[in-house]
Each structure stands twice: as structure tokens, then as C-alpha cells.
Length: 337
Image (cartoon, rainbow, N blue to C red; front, side, top):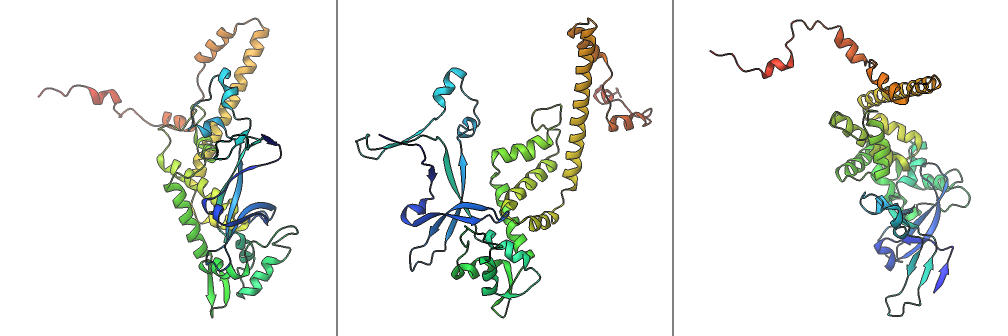
């Protein structure tokens, strides 16, 4: 059995097994940083276009791999965690396999070629140019740094950019933000409808931002329209991870998240107030412990202390409630007729 310490395990797309594929280095569509992608090259004479796949390494977190179930007990965790991979052939001879020491898997996710053209198209958004001139710029070192391959072959360039451009005389092209944004919105809608947000992004951009300090998870008190806005904003952030920064800003501006921003700012203030209150309590405990008071006595005093009232509660105190019925009056028996 051979042990291979430097091999990586990559899950290939289904079509890769019957096609020619290779790992290529391209300029990232958002940052222009050289990044490795999986490229499936069509067979000679085939009408199939070139396909690109993002490569993402996952370490196999227990909860992610087991549907959110809690980790096993400490006694079982060492046995439950993968430390390496064993690969064998389908034959009965199990000694012809090999071991990959690093228990990490690289998954391949399809990425549209249009993302790699957006940088140059957006820079030329005020110009109408022939196809070859645009592609020549794409090949320049500004958009294809040293050590990177050209992301879109010229023979496929027209088919890639045409759905997102206005075309004059069949040969001059200019980026159409309207067509592009309609396409990005369709992707956002598909992500939302299919619950396609990765768990870590959903937790960071939805749960963590909307959860009040008095709770550990999304509760019924959070309006559903706020949750929907947060999910939509997270989906747009995911889509824009492959879109140039300035273009992402324009796309975000076509959506109204003011209500969500106001709600998140309110939650932030509540969390800051809770932190200040906790720090004050800790200081009080430290101070009184030095004076000989017990922790139980201090906590009891804290419970008796008047809670900090919110702005809404303060405004409600100023309202004339003398003519208002108490809520219990609605549950009294009806007067006899």
C-alpha cells in the first residue's frame, strides 16, 4: 500500500471522466489574483463550450457532513474524525490502492465564463468596440496577469458576452447593465427558492446579524420580511463574490435594504448596551467581592435593580393611558342582559 503525502483529493464533475480536463491558473474575476480552476476542454470538433469550475477545499466538519447532528462524545470523536483517505480499485486485490494522508476534499463548482469578461466590459461600459478589440484587452496584462492563462478563448468570446451586451451592426459591442442585472437577479432568486445559501454564510449574514442579545437563535419576534431581506442580501453577496467591486456596488444599489439596515443597527445597539451592562455587573462583582460580599448577594441585588428601559418603553410611559382598557378586560364574562 502506497502512502502519498502530497496528493490532493478532488471530486470531478461527471462529464470530466469522459473529457479532457486540466487545472488552470486564471485571474480571479473580482480580485484579479491568480487562482486555480478546473477546466474541461471540449473534444476537437465538438460544439460543447469550455467549462470552468471553482475549486473549494472542505475539511469535513462533523456537523456539516452529518446534517447538523452534534459531535459524538469525546471518547468517540477520535474514531469519528477522518485522518486520511484510502483508495482501492474495484478488484478483489485490496493491496493495489494508496493512502492520501490529508483528509481534505476539494469540490468543483461550475462558474460561468461571463464573470471573467465583466472586468473588461465594465471598464469599457461607455464605449462601443468590435469584438476583437475587447478580447485583445482581455488578453492584456491588466486583465490577465503574468502566470495566468486567458480565461475565454476568442472563438467562444462572442457567445459568452452577447447575451449581456447591446450590439450595433452585428459587430460592435457594449455592456448592458440592464441585461446583466436581470441575469444576476435570476441567479439570486434561484438561490433563495432552492435554499441554496451555504450554512456558514446563512449563519454569519442572517442568524448572527438578526438575533437579539436576549436570544441564541432566530425567534418569532423577528419580522418575516426582515428575515427575507437578510436572505436576499446574503444571496446577492454570494453572487457578487465573482463580480468586480465597482459593478457589485451598482448592483446592490438597485435593491432597497434600508429597512434591514435600520433593524440590524437596532440589534447592534442592543448588543452594545448588553455588553456595557455585563461589564458594569462584572465590575460591581469584583468591587464588592473585595469588600467581602458574596456573589449570590451581588446577583440578587442585580436582579432587584431596575432594568434599562428601551426608547420605545420610555415613549410609551409618556402616553395618556387613562382611557385605555386593560387587556384583562377583554376576557371578562359578558354582562348579563
